Length: 239
Ligand SMILES: *Cc1c(COP(=O)(O)O)cnc(C)c1O
Image (cartoon, rainbow, N blue to C red; front, side):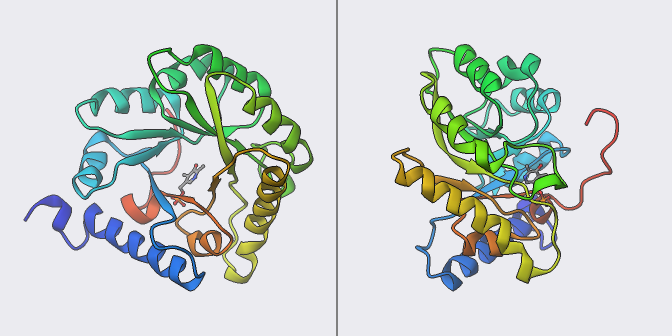
């Protein structure tokens, strides 16, 4: 039987994740299909991405520039949409601007300016989200909530970027009752920015362990790795 049809294979896990999303949409009274699934393929080889693509997945997320560059090249024969979701240093922006459709992890203006300057003319504007650190000290990545509005206005003015919304990566929280709080905070910020006239349509939030909570709070993209590809090897060299 084809790899994507095995009960324990990537295709079966993808179907299970899609089912979780559909149930969460229904539970929240949201329009079916209003939440997009981004398959986070970091640390997994091109063959795993091919298996997911064979099961109908087209949007993939990567965290590490060097790994992503090789993977995008190895999969150039497929029509995939690549999203960069990891920390981004200035010396790596060009590689991302030239290959990705989206960047979810913009958290300072200097990075946004470089991405805009380096986005090739033959490609459409780079779709971006601003990463907001809504859970305080837990993670260093992301702009502080009180600085997000100023950054959003500045990014929205850059010619080769299109600001789509906000992203967050809260500290892991196993208690479902507590998972919604950071997502609710991101959503309130998003609504405040929309109210002041920014044309945002994307809330990138929710992962394998908390996607139901994120969908309940209005996520439009959930980023799922483990639920689709299985456990990742411990992060080590090359990460
Ligand atoms: C790794 C990662 C994910 C996926 O996490 P899982 O728990 O494996 O689903 C989502 N978003 C970001 C930013 C990540 O780094």
